[in-house]
Image (cartoon, rainbow over all chains, first blue to last red; front, side, top):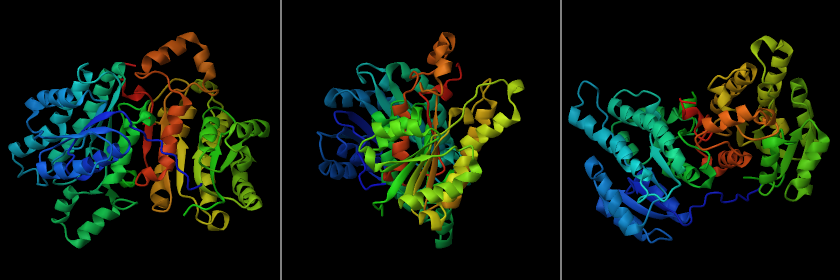
Length: 256
Length: 250
């Protein structure tokens, strides 16, 4: 192969809502989408990282909203405000997610409810807006960031696994509902990616545990950028015949 | 690092999806066009960007035992190496079980699966390819996941191909990434007879939420998986089917 690699990912002229944009996968996705020509509206529960990120994004104009997606009831209003201020959407990437590692016997209902609210219910509350003409002109791409935990078990991750597996089911049915509007709905299931969420997990492991987890991935730990590229592939014209699927980006974790 | 004599080998390049891949990838890669029919391969090459950069490797993939020697000789004679492999060649005979003679099933397995294993085995020999192979994409099918009348030999071969892909991905990591693309129904020469029947064509159109696919839809996915943008994707079945397998009412 030659070194020439055509840039087949082009998002010029589009407007994407990206949740969890303050850190990790959401942040890398926002930066990549902007560099591919998209306008992005960044949503995160933390103000400071959004303010810093938005000043460094190319193209634009971009926008930001500080919002806690656990407030599911308010999401319709959030989307309406975003559209009236920044224009209609061509798609969304729901990268916001929360995780609590705790044995099933100890986890409290309010903890798993918060995980489900942010990871799963917010995804539906956001994405269903793509069926509304005032939000989406017709045609677009919704990507939910799920996890290999949706398909493989992990002790201590019951609530997280449940929340991510539910995204897969939701994406399949939503894909069928939105197909007549040419809105595609897919999931990306990452393995362990170097993000602040992984750093928090790593603090609970010793070195040998960390090496054991990395060894589960034939290609090692991934980078947030790897997931961002997959999201761009699904969002751009390259993904035009892909809907209702799960794109696993895991360095081979699930293959063995 | 990619080098000047690195090539992308595309099997099944004489027609259909393989031909579309060759045309697209000729703009970014030096190609080895694999297929049975030299005349049709030359026509594919003539349609490529800078035709003189690309080479034709005539080989019948059902001759699995001949692959290792013939491919090694070809690479040596032309002084080229293979950094990417796209296995797009496939045989499809839609027949009810009662009409499937074992010889036909074996031919389907040779062309669709066993050749893929032998190609990768040959291309990972240091003496033959100097560890230059980086990325492999098998063109599988949604038939590897779901049943259909008359598809038993084809489905079984594609299921085997995907299982092979996963084991190769684990065995060859981290040096080589191996993935499958699973297309739904496309309009190509291989499927032309299915679309000739208006009833079948109407039913297919109704079953696909985003409509029937075009070869370019698959080529984009293969191009992504081959590229460095997919550097952390291996052992994956990427379904590109316009929503067909999601649709339980179909």
